[in-house]
Length: 383
Image 1 (cartoon, rainbow, N blue to C red):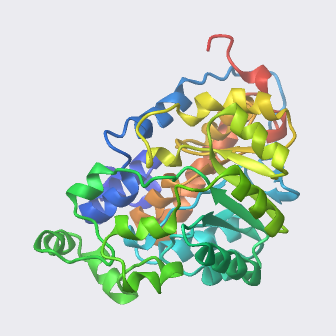
Image 2: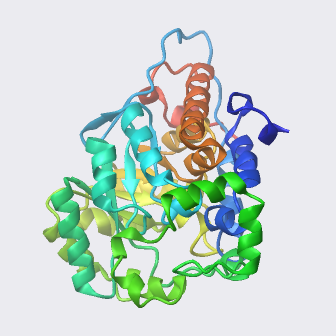
């Protein structure tokens, strides 16, 4: 079995997931691996990517492959980056900084979550110019303004506003695991930790993970759901987004767009881009897979703003599927998380290596020496 072998024997992101599952207590693994309710969207995101057929093209010189792409005026090594994930240090100790440093070293964007286990300042230092900040708009305006001001002071130039959490997602796995903030070490949790000794020892060394950017709020929070009521607001409207656009002087992206009219509205407001996302299937169990929603959205914005897609990226070719359907860029979240869970820094590097290798080989099969050569002409006529 792959999870008993060295990381070099892991051939896919799925292999890394299996290895991570064996190394991490169930309650912590489920925090990242799980989705909303019956996890229909989580499954469909990946399945829908696989359903997009690309047609190989041959007799093209692909002896040199260029995977670089430019997004928002910055050139990155690949057409994919690291999506924001909250509380990731609970999944694997020090995962936040490990992945931020990986993204800087490999020259891909790293998006620091508002709900990260590490402060936005420390993540900005680790990711340097490759760091973006993801913002949850709070029900308390002072909390939102405080995060924006801190992000500015830390040097972030790109803000990613998450719009798809007007209500907290119902995650059945977390309910069954009795996930709470701060963590409660129930007898069952203690037993799971004992069965994952490496994770437990590293967690003791690094300390109990919490939502670092909201340290003061943890004093009164009694559960993860209770904390989320402060992290998010059901009252976030287009008028609020307009005010955010005026407030933030750097690049502004809106994450969680699934409807063409919403995408067009973001462009009309003056946003620099959108992320076609259903939160990795973590917020709702209904609705379209992101790759299915993408074509109508790219048609609606007609190149006026950058279009990024996440939720379901598990293969390097997935970034090319998205590109062929009109996306400018892709983000993977769980793929990188499974890597760090499978083997810390080395595992994170292996996740990137797998995705990059698959990307290069897919470009060769498509007869595309560069990512920029990939377009709708590579889509199979049978869709």
